[in-house]
Image (cartoon, rainbow, N blue to C red; front, side, top):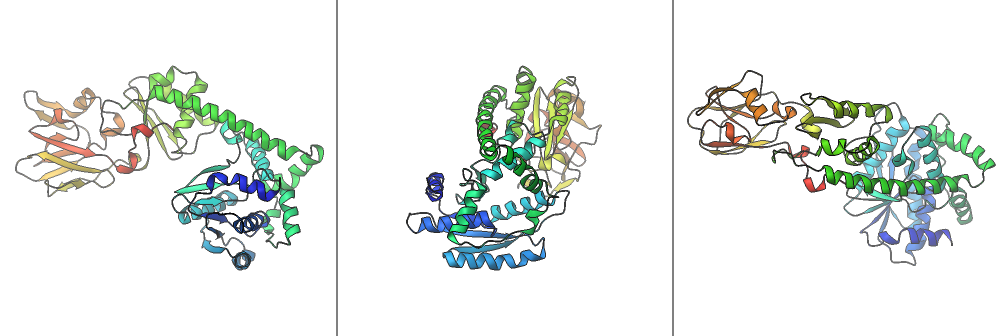
Length: 439
């Protein structure tokens, strides 16, 4: 089957998309993809096609590339958008450039649009080998997926069953002109080293190495799919909303997880955490064991790249964003008939009458006392223990004072001094929908 026909087959599920955007670097691979799409659009009813060129500005020679890309696109009758991206400095220039590039794509991609990239079978083999050398697990060794969500749209790689030699042959046959990025020859970069020094040796000894490695990635993809199904089964058993409905944070039942083998625990947690943070490597899973096995009255924390796992009330809780910074400032509530926005801590509203006198919202500092009808003065810490409020909530739980006296605790009506309720809505970006808590 011709390259053109295979491309059309690969794109069949995406033909109802509102638009196809091509990630166009001007290099060999993306030039072939763009040319093939232009030919197909002349004889097939396809979505509108346009190209995006991301200009990193990392090397002076790249300043001429946007003009080359415009020339190619004009010749094919395809609209081109040139986007400048700022690459943040870091330990890996490759990674920083890739992150900047995809951030630019996400910004430009509208809802349900498809971004087409030109990675091919040899790229897949190099990805598998690169990740294998870094000690990746099954999830990492599945390689690059044919399609995945990207921003409000989709990223699709329709050339993964085509080899580099096949694309090169097509480009020469069609007389295409493309950019040769000098940085692609620099073997200081890990992927370039694999491409120029390692893969040729492998393919000299095993000519079908790239295809076999890509096939292995597909087999591992099936294995990962089965692991994901198992994780979803285990996570369904571990779902628990907790005793406080207003505390709508991602949580799982610790006893349910502990009933699983250690391997199934890690598999379930990888699946649960995948959408929120970079997953830990093997050495850092000791943090999970410490959290899991801590004493009942302990408050262990497992810190990950984008948040923290806490343990409280026989649950594990995922905290991120505003939940990682405890609020401190007191806030005067000048208009208690209106909602009060708390800096970094959601909002409050008051039902009932707070009586006369200025109102102020504060946070715990220790030693607070609450004078409850029929119970006298009670230590707030002990009252929160009785209500089984998780420790990580207590430093940000709003406390309502009138004339310097504590009269109400947010979302705990049993601790109100008089007939009123202090209703707290936690920070919006730290909340989640319970039905979407396992993916």
